[in-house]
Image (cartoon, rainbow, N blue to C red):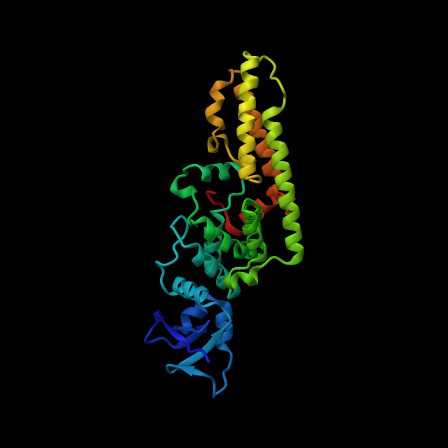
Length: 330
């Protein structure tokens, strides 16, 4: 039989109720919980049997939530400095825990705050994506960061929560999974990490993702190569032989990038590759033409990403985002 541990930071000596989640106990205040959460208010207002279980002289309520999630949620309830609004930096694990619990127990202000933090890392416009890829000002950058391997571990839960609470982040979340190595894609889709197994894709979701992943890789390759080879010659080119040679050099560079990151390259800006450094070697006519075709290819692919994963278009997703979050800087 497992013995529950006390949460030292959430054990108030004058508390009047003990919550238990994942073998961790929290001694807190009944009234504050009820004031913030209609679910807790109604649940705790129900008549209790005289022989109900007690802990430290208080009624004990056992909850099916993860200990870490409940810890983050209760700290946000009882410590106003713990979970500050965007753009204050936050831990992504804390964001996900608070989002899950605040939605379950109906705490709208915390749910919205968590959604804003989470959404800050998933732009819904190409301009927003480009800004985050550079060095955005504090009010326009994500409030959370992850190392790459941790992101692989987190993505199943992010996608799981987004399907219910934040569909506008799904295109970028699935796009990022598509850029993982094959074993990482397998791990993310099947969620074979620790307790994240509960967030694995269903069979239908996995099929939809893999179809989208295949389309993304195929269209990235074809549209990227077309952007640098079509038209074969530019009307008015000042140095045809030199520009042809330079375009072949650029195409070789592009193909090497495609091998490394096949599903991500087209959405990269020229400044994120070595292509930009080669543009001055083209004539004054060809250089802007190449930039324009590359820009058009990027926008075209961006517009098609949601549909590849059987999601609504960006316009609908952005409307859902606006309705849920209001106006945001990202």
